[in-house]
Length: 195
Ligand SMILES: [Fe+2]
Image (cartoon, rainbow, N blue to C red; front, side, top):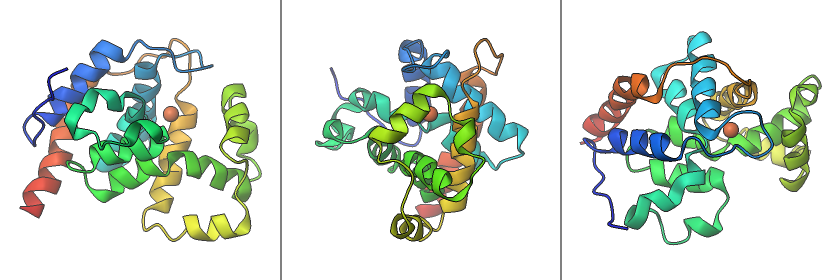
C-alpha cells in the first residue's frame, strides 16, 4: 500500500475514506457495524451538547481497529497494541490531547465506571460484559487513582457512556461526511494554534 500523505488538509478526508471502505465491518458481538457504532456515539455526544472535540472523540474512538490504514504514519508497533492506545497514537499528530486521551482511555473508562458507578455494570451489553473480563475487570483502588490523574478523565468517562449507548440496531444517524466540517474545525484549531 502506498503510504498516505497525511497533513492538516488531508486527514479528515482520509478518515472519511476509512469509514466508507471499512465501516461496514462487524463490531464484534454487537448488532451494529463499526461505522454505525461510531456514528451513534457521535450522535449521543451531540445530543448531550458536547463540544466539537468530544463529538470528534466519540466519532473516532474505535479508529484503532483500522490502524493498518495509516501505513508509514502508523508507529511500527501499533499492530501489537490494543486498539485504544493504537487509535490515540494515529490521531495524535492531528488532534488535541482531549481527543486522543478520550480515545486512549475509552476501554479503561469502562473498567473505571464498573469500579465507581454501581449502576453502570447493568448498562453493559453482553459482549461488553464479556470483554470486560479480558480487559482486567473493574479497576482496583490504585487503578482508579491512576485513572483520575489524567486531566481528561471526566471527558473520557463521557465518551465511554456514548460509546456504550451506541449499539442500537437500526438507529438513524448522520453520515460521516456530515461531521467533516466539525472534524476540520477541531484539527485546524489544534494545528493552527500550535503552529
Ligand atoms: Fe466503541
